[in-house]
Length: 388
Image 1 (cartoon, rainbow, N blue to C red):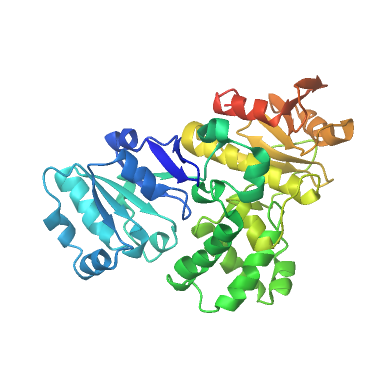
Image 2 (cartoon, rainbow, N blue to C red; image 1 turned 90 degrees about the horizontal axis):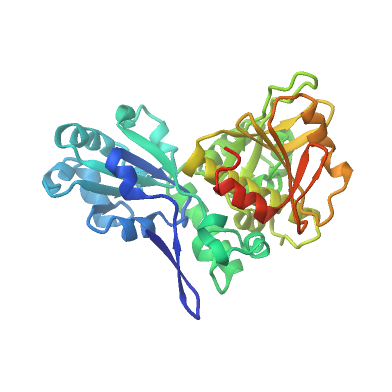
C-alpha cells in the first residue's frame, strides 16, 4: 500500500504504515485524520475493489442524505468492504451501517476529518462494532531516505506539501480550506473573523500550557468562547492535547495539559513566521516534530499514552512514553549539563526506566542516567520498538 506525491522531476511513492486490508479483515473501522493526510489516496491504492461512497460528491451526498436506505439497496453480496468517505457529513447514515454490519456482515471503512458531528446529538457510533484508527502526516519511518529534518520543520509533513514545489502557497491554501470546509461549511461557528483571529493566537501557543484569559484578550473574544474554539480544534483534529504525567511524588506535578498543532508547517503558516535553524522557534518546531513521531507510533503500533511532566518548582520534561521513558528534546548540537537538569530531577523519583535527550549532536553518548541521542538514532529506536 503506497501513497503518491508528485514533484516536477518524478513521482515518489511513499508506503504508509497503516494496512487497511489487514484492519478490515478483523472489524469495521473509523479512519480519522486531518485533511490532506492521504486518506483517499491510501484507500484508492489499498482497497481497489471496495465500493466507495464519497460524501463530498454532491450527487452522492444528496441521494444518501435524502434516502439513507439507498445504501442497503445498492450494496450487493459481492461488496464485502464498503468505504464511506467524510461520514461526518451524514451522521444518520451510521444507522444503516450498523444494520448492514449486523445483517450482512459487511465491513465498513468510515473516514472523516472531524469527529465533532459524530460526538453530538446521540449519533449511533456503532456500539463497539467499529474500531478507530488515525492517519497522521508522513513519518520518519515512512519517508525513509526522503526524510530531511530541516525540510520537515520548514514545510511540515502533509504529503502534498512535503513534496511540493511551492509549499508556502500550499500551506496558505490549506489554512484557507480548513476555515472554508471545516468551519464555514460545517457551521461550527458563525463568527468567522473571530475564529480566524483566535486561530493565529492559538498557533502562537503551540507546545505550551495555554493561558485561556490571555488568548481571549489577544483574540478579542470571550474566555468561554476560547474554550469552545479549542474544542473545535480538537474535534477537527488540528490540535492534540498532551496530558500531564502526574505520578511524581518528591516534586508536585502540574495537572494542566499542553496543546500542539498536528503539523508543524500548518502551525508556522498560522503563526505567520518561518522556523529557521538556530532560533527558539526552530527548537519549538523540532519538539513538535518529535511529538508527531511519538503520537504516530502510539497510534500505529504501541497504543501507549504520551504525556509530559512539569513540577510546580519549574522542572519540565517534554514527553513521557507510557510509564517508562522520559524524552527531553533539544535542538542543539552541543548538550550541556544544564540541558539535562530536568531529566536528572525526574530520575530522582526512580519511576522510569529510560532518560533520553534527543538532539542534534552527531553521536550517542551518556551523561549520568541520561542517554544523549542524535534524533535519527532515537527515531530508529522508536520505530524499532526499543522504547515500548
